[in-house]
Length: 354
Image (tube, rainbow, N blue to C red):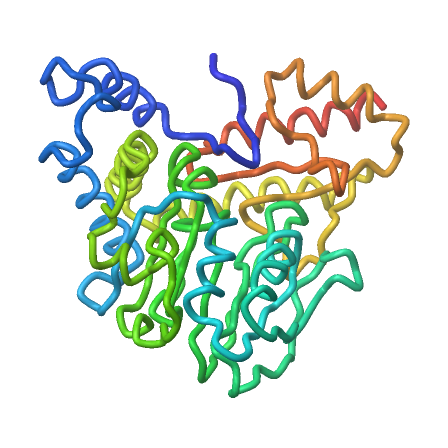
């Protein structure tokens, strides 16, 4: 039996997706060639990337609304740089809610003035800032929808008069939002969509008019949009698996269906964390992430026993990030409810035997 995979990324993927992907590596489209051997310019792969791009827009309800989707290299970390290179002309605003927004701010400062519109660093990023004012004289506002390391998630997004840019790497396609509020969304594939190696970017076409400086080709959104996301050799395997995962999600019923499942998983685990006196959550309740639940033991003397128990139960990837410690249960779209139940069973068994 496969392990219960709570890894924060690369993520758990649907079993049927893994099966189809493994078959394609051996023989793709019954052409007696591997997916990773064929030309990325060949019709079979062009069909793959076009379908993946189209499916992303459909699931976000952004098809036919003036948006373009791209699959690019470099992970979200390269997007930190690209966004500033393309759109930071004078001054930009950032919400600082964790490690990845801090890294985005660092890259942005290379290209212009930055202001932290709000920050939760004062409490070690265990909450999402509220009641802040967004300036109207900035080039854009950047935010991070879900903070994988700390376990916080934005439940509401500001209504702004400037372009709104969001890093959705760890909760893309997991919940219903009005995605038309955003001018640019980006997400590394390896959290909720596919293996590492590709990054989804969804950009409002009108935003391209805001690019005023000369940008190197590989970092230019205009170039990648103009070349239909095929300016250079794309990450063939990652894009193919992402296409399969998006198909899997559409067949289930899309984002409305998976949001309901994700809420059930999160409720099951958070209810146990709150009920069981051996554990405590790291995040204020109203900002808890549905994707990444972070928690600790109240008595560290139980750590060795608890660790042995969850490993014996074939649970994988439960350790918290090295900068935070404790535990982190990442409950991405493909994680089944019974895996969360398996973790809850171990927590209850620890309570009985402590």
